[in-house]
Image 1 (tube, helix red, strand yellow):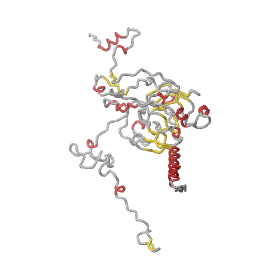
Image 2 (spheres, rainbow, N blue to C red):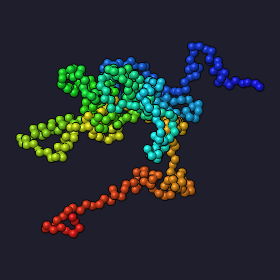
Image 3 (cartoon, rainbow, N blue to C red):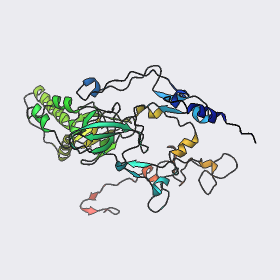
Image 4 (cartoon, rainbow, N blue to C red):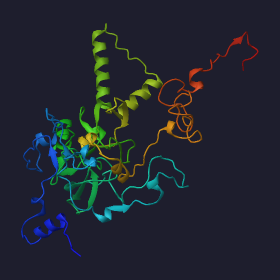
Amino acid sequence: MAVSFQPRLFLRALQLPIRGASFSSFRSYSSVIHETERPPVEESSSFDPSIAFAPPPTRDEAGVLVRTYKPRTPGVRHLRRPINDHLWKGRPVHRLTFPKRGHAKGGRNHSGRITVRHRGGGHKRRIRMVDFARNDPGPHVVERIEHDPGRTAHIALVRAQSNGKLSYILAADGMRAGDVIQSYMPGIPDDLWKSMGGVIDPGVLAARTAWRGNCLPLHMIPVGTLIFNVGLRPGKGGQLCRSAGTFATVIAKGTEQQKNEERKQQLEAEAGTGETEEKRLSQRDRQKVQRDASHVTIRLQSGEVRLIHKDCCATVGVASNPNYQYTQLGKAGRSRWLNIRPTVRGVAMNAMDHPHGGGRGKSKGNVHPKSPWGIPTKSGYKTRPKWKINKAVVVPRVRNQGKRRRGYN
């Protein structure tokens, strides 16, 4: 029987005897970068305003840095991936991870019921234990930037200079290996106190602490700074703006609002006719002043303005991997690898499975759009409950010459 060698095996056999030659030289990389690569910038741990207060990445006519592939198969024809060549190629630190097992991968709760639909399968994962609170003081050196399969943003492995402790934190956009970052949540260090002469100087404090990647209380961050990983309660870790490319903006602080009010009252007193009688504040106004003094106003990317306590944590900068929004998976199989199951339209189901199901053809039975549980959806007609539309009129309490009228308490 004649034995015929396959072309791939024959080429591989030809490559094996060649010593000192890498296999990458025999096959060109099947990707195209739409933007010219910039030369690498040497990282420095010393203070550099151009690095610490780096502006957002500029985008020219070529667009963002996205890698495309030659359409050798239908699955890679529409594949788009952001270019992150600085990521660590190896495995994570094993003691800082634990396996993801059980019902959590299938969208089940503790009783086994599906609470989140379209979840299941996916590749085996290990959960990275990320430090969102960052309560460890002292400088930390960034060892490397890693990919986390459980989130869209990247994580950074940092090592404390004092004791060599390793931990994972959320990486800021532009953070690279070798950067030195610090957390000021435990308080202002002694060397910084001595440099300021024992008195808090807001300008010096902002120039020394508000660097990209540093974690600070909200009252120490200057107005107009971009922040991410924002906490909601004092003493708890960050909960807002943790996804890739997200950030919030500090727009006002309580101390500045109080100074503006005092300045306004002073101008009104100077412009008056000499009457300097101070208006007595009501209890509601006093509570508002106290609340503003202890909170910081931030604006989210959605335009929502929120009051956050001044002792909550926040990290200076923008969450890493901002080009994630331009990702295209290219095929349905990659969604299954990411633990995402298919989504079936309601009109394609049977009548017992969905309110839109049943009937002949593509018809939902002349009913308003509803969820699988019968709740009106798609923000239109009949989406609000009746108790919100037809509010009961509250009749005031009336007394007629000391006698209660019939029908009133």
